Amino acid sequence: MKQLLTLAAGMLSGWFLSLPVAAGNFEAVTAGSAIAFPKDYGSHPNFRTEWWYVTGWLRTAQGESLGFQITFFRSKPDIDEHNPSAFAPRQLLIAHCALSDPKRGRLWQDQRIRRAGFGLADASEKDTDVWIENWSLKHSTQSYAAKIDADEFSLDLSLSETQAVLLNGEGGFSRKGPEQRAASYYYSLPHIRVAGNISRGAAKSQVSGEAWFDHEWSSNYLDADAVGWDWIGINLDDGAALMAFQIRGLAGERRWAGGTLRSADGTIQLLQPAEVGFQAGRLWRSPRTGIAYPVEWSVRAGARQFQLKPLLDDQENDTRLSTGSIYWEGAVQALEDERSVGRGYLELTGYGQRLHLR
Image (cartoon, rainbow, N blue to C red; front, side):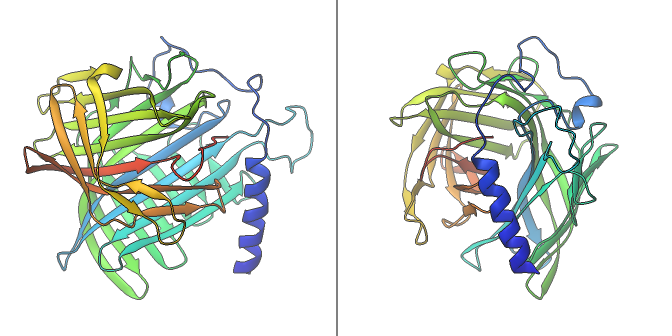
């Protein structure tokens, strides 16, 4: 059965990635359209791409430090809206999950892809309630529940909000390129308190920690000259929070950058492209794919300068059976003036090959 599901997922992924890119069948992201709650916690099925993304650091009762990542994607294929068939894939649901485990030396990771409906998967428009079979992420008043039953590991986590929503960009309108059409609607929830249980193989552990939550949706995330991005979400120890990113072009140049820095007193600084700098440091080369990733960075955010160091080097995600991509996404420690000041996640896409979002 597992082999059949893997084959089916691979066939669906290949079909999914071969879809033509068209602009006429999707709702556009526009400046001045304010994000509003509670409706924007839910799914936005008229947009091409959407994701709910949780990353964080965990500590086991035995004192181990681990990273975790849970991402649910929703994608709207470009198909005939008037197709009467119940089997037409009007929405696809995809999920990735990974544990960064220094003792193992590489990720525990798994992935899922299903079409919405038929009791297989769905994403509610009323609130964050997205699931694929026995994988789920569900929001209730000021908390989330995440349950992942993967092939070799599992997570059962309670995620409690401790801070207000952080709108990225102008009121949640986040530019991703020189032209305004390359943009997303984007909000974050930093400093989420985590408690629950995980398993790795036969070993089970109680865990606690802190996480970062993102929700983003778009119909034209990257422009034609972009290959990928570098992104960080950092929970700073004093209660402040930093999100920063850069979009890279075909020749490796920076096409765009931005970010949001919220101080411990709640003051928000929207970081313009000139105020964000990503300087790559030490490289790590994957023994499986041969892709070289810069796993240490110096990141400038306004007047502040941070150094990022990974929990472990091998945090490469292979999601070719779902989204067709290979990228590096992992737990990092943030330092400032050689002093530890926070922890979070770093995501590096488009290094092995150009990232294609559908």
